[in-house]
Structures are given as structure tokens and as C-alpha cells.
Image (cartoon, rainbow, N blue to C red; front, side, top):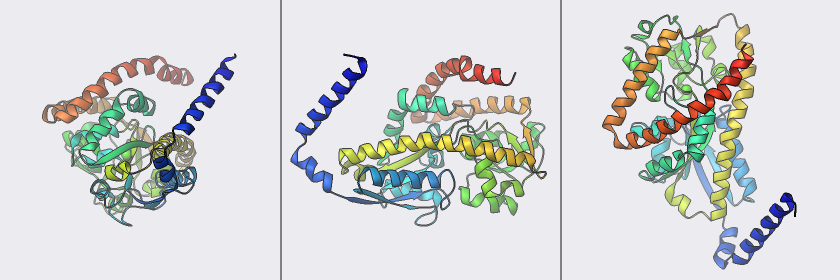
Amino acid sequence: MKRREILAGVGAAALAGCAQEQTDSQVAASVETFEWKMVTTWPPNFPGMGTGVARMVKQIEQASGGRLKIHVYAANELVPAMEVFDTVSRGAVDMGHGASYYWKGKTEATQFFTAIPFGMNVLEMNGWLYFGGGLELYRELYADFNLVPFPAGNTGVQMGGWFNTEIHSVADLKGLKMRIPGLGGAVLERAGGTPVTLPGGEIFTSLQTGVIDATEWVGPYNDMIMGLHEVARYYYYPGWQEPGPTLECIVNKDAWAVLPADLQAIIEIASAALNDQMTAEFMARNAEALAELEKDSRVEIREFPPEVIEQMRVWTNEVLDELVARDPKAAKIYASFSKYKKKAVRWSAISEQAFLNTRSL
Ligand code: CA
């Protein structure tokens, strides 16, 4: 038998086995329908994140033959963005979508599952989450909050942010009030800045009215839709604070437990699909938006000076050392994260990084 025939044979045998083992309760489960509510941290239909979530719930409904229907609520439609975690945790709604580092006030270890400064890019994050033990640790941490998390989106490396003053040295960050969530914010604090965590929908007005002096958000595509290029002049790269941020889908554990196994599998698969598709969408749209931005005379795209990046890296290590010293959960997750990262960095150096260098020659 050729390899293809062997595989086909195995598949058919496995399917026959499944059919024979299907019990009455599974048959009953297959006709039961579920209507869920999902709250998100994104503005209504926000391109990339909100539209990605809309695509995911449509896929879930189609794949389940209409047995799992999910109503999506944007930030503030049912609850404010920053209440998504609590709302799903207590079971007021079944599902949520956002970013784990928004919940650092619940437990600081959540931040590793979005991004940490100078951490891992999208390829490395996915390697750790799916095949390096990361997802098990993510589920263990969220079980304390009655939640089941799924990686569900990644923007790829972000931009460093929008400023109205040039950044020549870390001294230029002193006194700066900047929207920058997660551990990146803790690093800005070392520089004498004031980090704030604002949901996407509040960034433009805050920057326009001077409530904040600077902001990071995502990248050219999302930032332009938000109009950030109209209220800030300097657009800095690279996004040292978020090299490959993973977004999350969270499901209330009690709601998850009563879902038939096939619907659970559909959620798992749809989340993984969104995780990949969002990265693809951001790659395509950021490239288009960057071309637009480069033509815009109001905007200057700048690279952070090497000495600024170097100092940020030093402060990041201090921030991480202090975090793991005070929080045993963060210590456990960081041990896995950093052990994996050490290996991944070596492989990335002679694969992606070496290849990208050949294109810049
Ligand atoms: Ca960001």
C-alpha cells in the first residue's frame, strides 16, 4: 500500500469506530442547541480584532449546524472593556475576547500569555503555547477564575507608539503619560513615565485632549483607523513592548463543562483558526497602511535610538526579576517561558532572523 492509501484506510477505520461507539446520550447532545453571549474588549466591528471575532462566531455557528449560536457584544454594549474577565468569570455571560495582560490586576502572571517586553514573536509564542507547555500553564492559571482560555488572535510585532516629542534618550520619556498596558508600562515607569491602561476605544480622545501624551496601540492598520496619525507626529518602532501579542478567547468553565464534546472541539478549532488568520490579516493590512503613512507629511516614522532600547532591556529584566520574586505563579510561568525562549531564540537566529537579514543586504 502506498502511504496515502494507508492513511486513508486508518481514517476510515477510525471513523467507523467512532460511529459504532456513539451512545444515546451523544445522539441527544447532537440535537441540543446553545445560545451564548460573548463580551469583548474591542470597539464595535473594530477591524482586525472585532471583525476577527465576528468571523469566528460565524464559523462556529456554521460548523455546528446552528447548534451553537453566539451573540457578540463590543466594549460598552453590555459591559465596559475592562470588565470582560469578571463578567465571564462569574458566568453572567459565557464567553469573552480580549488580551490577558488587561487582567494583571487579577493576577500578574496573566501578562505572559499576551506579551512581555523583549519576549517572543508570533511564531515563538505559538510554539510555546501549543507545543511548549504554555497553554497548559495558561489553563491552570485561569482555572482559579473559573475560565478556560484559548489563544485567539495575534497582531504580530507591534509599533513602539505615537509621540508628540522626539525620543533621543530615555530622559525624553520622563514625565510622559503614556497608554501602554502590561509589563511595558512597568518599564516606562522606570524611565519616570506614567503608564495608563486604556481600552482601544478611549485612546484617540485621550491623546487629542491631552489626557495622555503618548500611546502605543497596535500597528499602522489599526492605528490609522483610530486616527492616531492625526494627533501625534512621531511614530516609533520597533514594538519592544509587544513583540508578538496573543489575544484570547475565554469561556466560563461551567458553560464549557455542559457543552457536548463536538461543540467544544469546534470552539477550540475556531479559536486556533482566528489565531492564525488574524496574524495573516495584520501582515497584509499593515503593509498597505504603512505605504499610506509613509506618504503622509504629518507623520515621521522613527526608529528608537539603540541606547534607548538597551536601557529598556535592562529595566525589563529588573521588572521581571521583581515580578517573579513576589509572585510564585508568575515565577512558575516565567520559568517555562524563558526556558522555551532560550531555545527558540537560537533557532530563530539561524532561520527567520538570518533569512530576513539576507533580504536587507
Ligand atoms: Ca499594543
